[in-house]
Length: 314
Image (cartoon, rainbow, N blue to C red; front, side, top):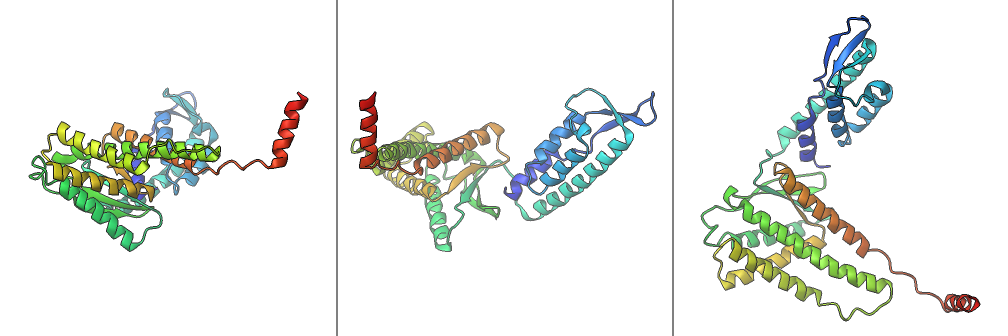
C-alpha cells in the first residue's frame, strides 16, 4: 500500500477517540457509551493499513465484548473495560498521528487534477526514460490543439515508493479531456486483452485461431478511432496529421500496459471516478490471469484408447 493511500485512510478515520460516555446512574462501576459503532467503523477502515492491523486485531481480541458492539444505540459497559479499551485507542491514535506527520512531510499534497502512473515492479532507468518520453510526447501533441494550447502543460508533480509511482499535474481546465483519454486507453487495452484471451483459450484446447484478427491492426484501428472521436466530440481542433501522431503515441502508451504500467486518478478525485478505474483495472488483471493459465496437457495415445474403450463399454 502506498503512503498516500495510508494518509487518505488515516485522514478519513482518525476520529477514533470520539467516544461519548456518561456515568450510569444505577451502578457506579458502569458507563453509558454512545457512538461506539462509529468508532469501530473507523477502526475497521484503519485495519487496511498493514502497520496498524496487528494492533487493532489485538485490541479486538483483548476486549471482545466492546469490539462486538454494532449498534448505534447507547450501551452500558464496565468502566474498567472501557478505560482499558480507550487507553489502547489512544496508543493507536498516536501511531496514526506519527504516520500522518511523516506522510505530510514527504508527500505532495493530494489535488484532484493529478494522475498517478504506477510503474512496473522491475524497471530500469532507461525504461523510465522511454516511459517519460512516451507520455511527454503524447501530452505535447494533445496540448498543441487549439482548444488546449492556452491551458498550460502537464507537469511532473512527484514520485512515491510503495511500488513505484509517478505523479503528473494536469491543468484543471484540461482534466476532463485527460480523463476521457485515460478511459479510452483502458477500453482499448481491454479489447486487446479480450482478443488475447480468446487466443489463449483456443491454444489451451489445441484449436486453430487463424480466424482471429491481427491484434496489432486492431489496436491501431481502435487508437485511431478513439483519437478521432475525442477530437470531434471535445472539439480539440487537431488536424489529420496531429490526429495520426497522437494515435501513434497512444499505441505506445498502451504497449506500456503490457509491461505493468497503470494509470490511476488522484486519490482526491470523486469516489465514483476512482471506483470506475479500480473496477476496470481489477477486470484487466483477471483477464491477464486467465490468459497466463497453462494450456491443457495433450492426451497420450493410451489415454485416448482408454477413453474409446470406456465409450464402447457403455
